[in-house]
Length: 126
Image (tube, rainbow, N blue to C red):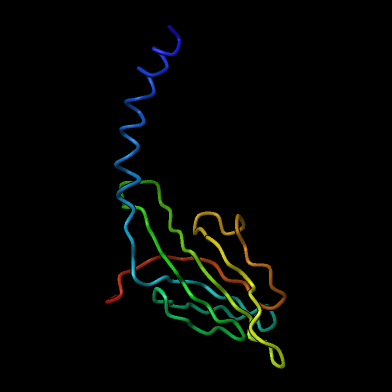
C-alpha cells in the first residue's frame, strides 16, 4: 500500500521536473572573470566554446556552457579545462571540471596567482 501511495505522490512531480531540465539552453560563449592575485586586477574574459583564451599564464578552454531560462532559478554552468603554461616546462593541467556561477567556491580552481569564476553564458553575436 505504501509503494502505491509513494508512486501516486511522486510520479507527477517527476514529470513536472523533466521538462524544466530539458530547457537548459546551450550557449556559444562563456563569460568568465579572472583575478590576478599579484596585481589585484580583475578582467572579464569571453571564451568561445572549444576555443582557447589566454589569461596571464593560463590557457582556458570552455567545453560547454549552459544557462537556465529566466523563469527557472538562476544557474549558469561551464565545463572548463585550464592549463598553466609555465616557462621551462610543458603545459600543466590546473583545472578540469564544472564551475557554477551561483556557487563559485563549490568547484574552485586552486592556483597561487590566478582565480577564475563564471559570470554568464551568452550567444556568440553578443
